[in-house]
Image (tube, rainbow over all chains, first blue to last red; front, side, top):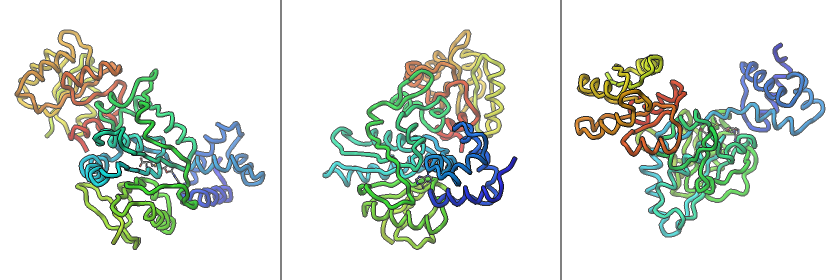
Length: 273
Length: 123
Ligand SMILES: C[S@@+](CC[C@H](N)C(=O)[O-])C[C@H]1O[C@@H](n2cnc3c(N)ncnc32)[C@H](O)[C@@H]1O
């Protein structure tokens, strides 16, 4: 049975207002698929019942789960590789030198998903800092979904997950075997702070960052929301800091106060026209 | 054309790897154990990468790695272990012997491609 137009519109509006994620009309199948998985997990008979529980009974926690179910959490260690090469070869050495006096370096990972991206950054940071223990270095990793944050915090990955993108030398150095899975070592976990943070709600409680990773999340938003987020990000980025977006994302043409820096095969953005 | 040597005593495994590597544009040579692998390398003159199983009759994978790394003329050859040995100690042992990458069985085509790309041999 497929989802009615009315139900689809309801889901689309809720998801849009809660997360700014846009669901095109052709995403009916996706809504159906994700919500039936959720219904099953929650012991609810079917998608119709799930939707009416949220709509007619105003069940807020179920509504949040519904929004979460529509997010895409696809990620991997060192995803797309080049931004991380640029971090290791150019950005981190430069900023570590510039911050030598204050010994403070803060990175924000604004769509952290299940943790592969923040842990990749933690590995690079740890391997780049001359004396990690003497630095006040932190990675703040945020996401809208408590479920992915939970997995990120546990830091447990399957053989398949660590097989993708993570060099073997880093695996043996920074992970330990826990049963059939691989667990991020404590010293790496300690470098990352996980918090729930919705990019489309008012931004509060964040420090200033030297580097912001905001990758593969803006693609889900329309231009106005994107602009708002990137304008906010400017306030939290150090004047000599860097912003990284996903491979298919750009802020060219949005008229924002950033300029692009080419770093070999990738670009980053710095404040100022 | 890129060239790969597959060293594994399982015919099925060699077939699977051959299929994946052909799809990535490699020319392939196969060997059933370490000794055959060394012989195959001689015959090939050069190869970009060797994918090497650990447990094989005759000469095993780690002995193959030691033997290749002892020969100057193969210094450019990248070595990727592809094995069901999944202990950290084994991995360390292989890396110390001179392997460049390590794939745990079972693997997917995506993982093979990912690892080759870490070695600069695939997109
Ligand atoms: C495709 S993943 C990207 C993960 C990682 N940055 C990467 O590039 O591999 C997108 C993530 O954005 C999160 N997300 C979606 N909407 C969000 C919002 N409004 N605020 C914060 N995070 C959001 C999702 O929960 C999901 O984990």
